[in-house]
Length: 513
Image 1 (tube, helix red, strand yellow):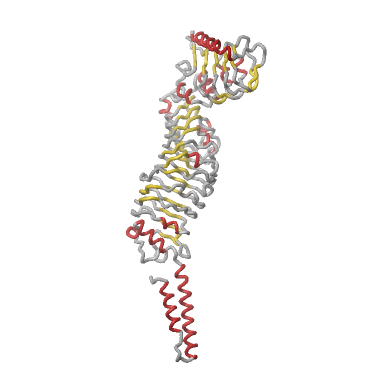
Image 2 (cartoon, one colour):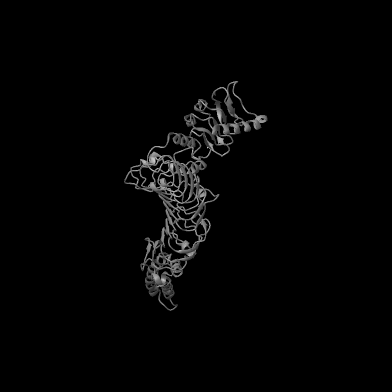
């Protein structure tokens, strides 16, 4: 292909020839000048578009050589990517490169910074090659789809793609050569692509950092369909505020994530959930309305509480994995068409019984009490089986198997006192001092017929203490919003703490006798 500048050179030559010599006639000058002027205008009209029609040729030449595409795909410098139809290159009507599709084509070079000069580039697919080196530190403001999986890239610049205002799809999975890098986030407000992003997949890509910064409230992600960040080194919690009406697949498996999974209740359109292999804690949320859910993998975490009926009853479920957690209560009974590992989970005492069926009545009461405390891990790890008198943390029984005392003092519990305390009619002692409990003291506790001591001191309880039987010792100091009514009530004060401790020890001896 002749360089476009040759047309301009020819025009200038004609213009020089058109200048008449001193001996030429005016008539010849006029005739020759008119003809020559026409040729000049013709060549000029051709020359200017030829110069501007293919502005990406030079950049693509650099890209071809750097990637090794000149050999792998025949992208050679003496041809045009748009005119000569380079393999995998798409151009628009004005000769700008808009897409490059080079998946699994044997590329083994580097990705040069020059590629950022392709201003009309909307899609770049370089998956499954052997491209090495650093990703270029380019903004890619208008790039919509970027697929880089299965290469040998070694580093990603800080803030890569942060300002990509049009980004819809980004994938870089199976990039084992990458140095540790972090998701785009920081103190600069929302990401440029938070409203356009549809797919973000970076499995097995040495991804690190705090996930909460990426999923925080600054980013709306109101178009996100797939978020997959499995097999990385992500830490932190998923914010309880993380919500999406479009997210259908969430895979955060095999990271180091912690905290509650209450955010799942905000993701009503989910079809697949994979959170296995982390350190998530606390109970499962209500799954009512998650009608599209087909796959749930929560195995190998520290989840507690009861598997909710709202999950068990979802008609579209096909696979559920919950083994190696600290679930409590009865074995959940999923439909026969659902593939589960419930039997394996039950064999490790995740539930009160190894087979389906109701728990002991006392176990049901204690599970309700644990629910009031938001199912703390300490209780879930200890409360195994179907007998509360079998070395359950904080539970005291007499020789007849009657539950006579509970001591949950100073265990950093949150939540409230559940009315189910009142179901344990043989209780003589309740100690919940030194926690972070809120709410009121249920009247069902005051109605316990054998109660001798209740210690609720140093919490954040409120309301009015219910009326207890005469002779019940009440310790309630340290609850500034709790009112003790009735002259017969005894509030233990600082000078009496030593006596109170001795009295509590005596009661423990009594209830174990």
